[in-house]
Length: 518
Image (tube, rainbow, N blue to C red; front, side, top):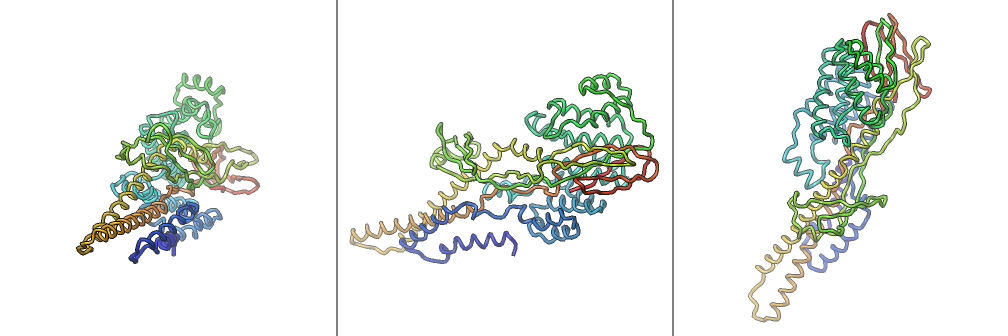
């Protein structure tokens, strides 16, 4: 039995006393009290396992380097094989095959993930499930940064396979993704509307393919993001290597004015390279990306009208949130009856707080990698950026559920009244008629309360945050540019005392390679 089946069984136990029974008013009141006792238990008892918990075995094997077992975990995991999680299945399979060293199969799955992102559209079913149940029930379409990382891995795979043309295709896809991201947030400096790392990688891909003009444009675009942000962007200081790559590509193209301009902006001097045996850009993936977890917030009505709420999180932090109830088709009259609501929101928990100390050595020369991407910072901050939007959507979902509860209670009460009224015989005694009428209303009211509480139990149990994400991503990506010698080059990577050896053949031009150092 998987965790989801266990949760459903637990829910069945909770509502069982109300099923398959014909209850009188006293029995109904007994079960109502019992239901209320259940409802005041900590809400975490009703929470289903997070997505991350359901994937524990897979992640354990990934971090231990047991990639064949990790692949079997994915194939046997019912949750990730569901239609709504198809993208995550493709992403995790692609990443696992890459770490295993099977780059052909890696790109087979990563291409399926790419196709899914391109063709998938939000359906009416997805919208309904998200609004009436929880966002975990809709099809996963990926975080914005996950799409850029997808292009990064595909490009590295193609480069290692010697397929420069396909790697250039990924470089062009980065431009399309960057344009879409910019349009989405109107290139706002307060939102994740650009990805400096992806544009930096794009420049390297073009340089590898011998297209120095486009390499210059990409390096310049990446550098400009850092300059516009004060030389620091989502936890990454502008790499000194990026500065030299931009100056070198500008000099190669004869753009003297650009060389002079950026030397002043960077407060540095361009140093021409003298190596003729080629270079290697080595990317180092390290750690594990932050994990999404569920955090519960209580929202209560505040002063200033029915559309104003105050939310309080589990740490006691509170803030006001204005709610445009008209946009969700919720009337002011119905809204005014709501006093408090629990909503579940996703938050990221960071596993690896800082990059480890690492060096790269070739022929006695020691090189220090520079941080290129900080997914801890990217993931945590973009979730913060859309917090108000997600909280508003969660509030709307819970208010819709509240309306359904009240509607169910009223409808059940009316049906019960109608049935009991039809079953009554003609009664001449007015006193007995009044007594039966009161009893009918009492039973109907009790039946309505039971129905409303059952709906409340279901709504409480199903309120969940969307805790899905591509969790085999690293926390950090560093990179270093190494001049190669002709012939065989044995490179040693040392990360906190753990060494890894890489053999690269020196050849003219630029090579790209990525390794996982955990």
